[in-house]
Length: 77
Image (cartoon, rainbow, N blue to C red; front, side):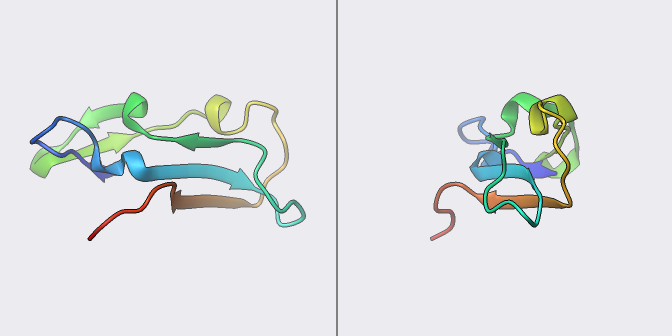
């Protein structure tokens, strides 16, 4: 889940990069940047639920053993 910034209507979570990885490969084959297009539900307190389909995370159907979440841009102060 991530939180919506009510001032400008964007998701604070749009800094997220989500990727599937395999320990034998140094870099993921595919990653998803920005999650606003995957919002499935608005929750209380400004939070939203995000669902990223496997077809977006793993379009080639490669084996993986890790799910990586990281910021693709600087966040915070």
